Amino acid sequence: MVMPISCSAFRRTALVLALVTGGMPAYAQESTNQSTGQSANQSATQIASNQAVGEVVLIPNRVIYPGETIQLTALKQVTLIPGKHKPEAMATLAEELQGKVAKRTLLPGRYIPSTAVRDAWLVEQGAAVQVFFISGGLTISATAVTLQPGSAGDLIKVRNSDSGKILSGTVMADGTIQVSAS
Image 1 (tube, rainbow, N blue to C red):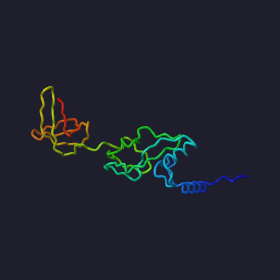
Image 2 (cartoon, rainbow, N blue to C red):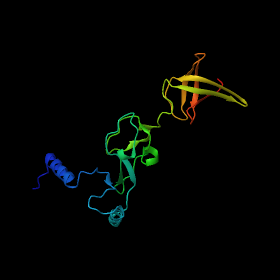
Image 3 (cartoon, rainbow, N blue to C red):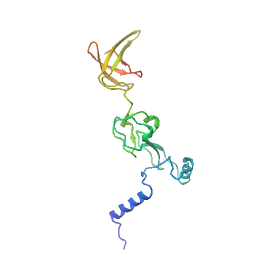
Image 4 (cartoon, rainbow, N blue to C red):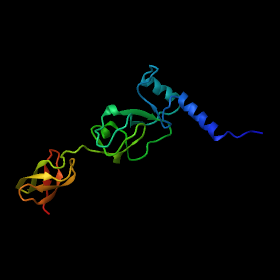
């Protein structure tokens, strides 16, 4: 008669296997900085000889806190295990992440959702900015104070310094605000 393996024995075995194999995440393996001195090409060739190479993605290698600018040094490049695919709406390219700001805590070894990062603010709340109204050949400019932070393309509210009137305008790439007729 065969005795079933108890749950605790199964967990112990899984823990021992995880510790022996180096504790890498189950969905990925490191694709850079091979400790045995093998080059990335040799390890890719070795993987290809066994099975197809998976997608390469970037994940945090340390905790990234909300409001912190993401630097490439805080990210680690890993290769997904063949057959695994990254979930949709996940930021995995350096261009998508470099210089962005975390909107929430990003944990090491986890995917980075596209909704968890934002562009850095181009104008801060309470900053004095130039506001422009352009219609045909007419250009009107004024000084205003921002009531919200914003990055290029964001619609924010500003208060005209002279009249006190609150306007909505689009943040331009040069840090000015363009308002339209309302």
